[in-house]
Image 1 (tube, rainbow, N blue to C red):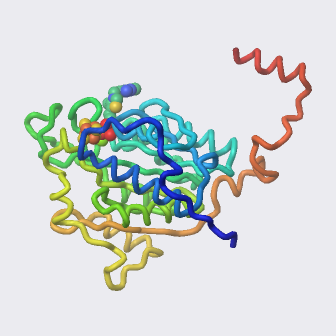
Image 2: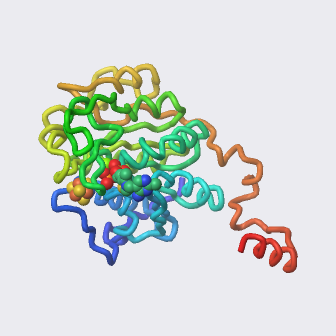
Image 3: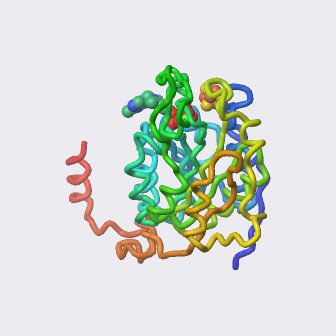
Length: 293
Ligand SMILES: Cc1ncc(C[n+]2csc(CCOP(=O)(O)OP(=O)(O)O)c2C)c(N)n1
Ligand code: SF4
Ligand SMILES: [Mg+2]
């Protein structure tokens, strides 16, 4: 195994200061991602952070690495293209619950069943933050928001269960108020070969007055300290994914090494596409490019 040379978190300091509201949970996620990347010794040139649209999706601008701030709900599609073009890159997708579990849920499911080697971090604040407080797919029942003034009567999505049944091979949940634990989960997710989801309780201090830091502090517990819990057992993981109320689990629900999409795609067997010869002469290349202009 290659020796890892850890990098200081300043390696990833961006020139752009985050403009999130003071106290926003997303600060903790950014910090944990920097710690995880540093501990894995990932050079910023080998790190690609892709997002959709939302407060959380502004994260690529706040970290020194390659980044794409794409379209609402389309981050996974863009990240898939990037990963297939250069599977040597560490591709991390960062976004919100609205972005990933609402408009982008189709991409989410298909990326998981393909077991693409992508790391997906969802800053789940159970609200649309950027558009000022409408219900999201993870807003709890009965919660009043701008778009549900009489209380939300829709059943929230269970992202952990959805990931487990869709074929994700690393499924975890963290809390932005527990930075060290969150950094450990991110490290595990980035190091894991295959699709990893880390759903993060990342409180929106401005528009969600229900799911606050205190709300989670009173309820969370860690799966790794539960006697007999086995993260290799998908049925145990599924049972815990439905736990919500007085006790809410954090940690790695499930991890299982399976062949990735990239490992099975013959076109990638000779190395990343960006390093393979196109097999075109100059004229054909120019013709091809013009066709798309
Ligand atoms: C196609 C499209 N539809 C709707 C919007 C408006 N919009 C921008 S962000 C957003 C929701 C953001 O919520 P979430 O993904 O949870 O991110 P947060 O702001 O909470 O971090 C919506 C509906 C958009 N930008 N593009
Ligand atoms: S509105 Fe909410 S999610 Fe957006 S920056 Fe402020 S606290 Fe964070
Ligand atoms: Mg949100």
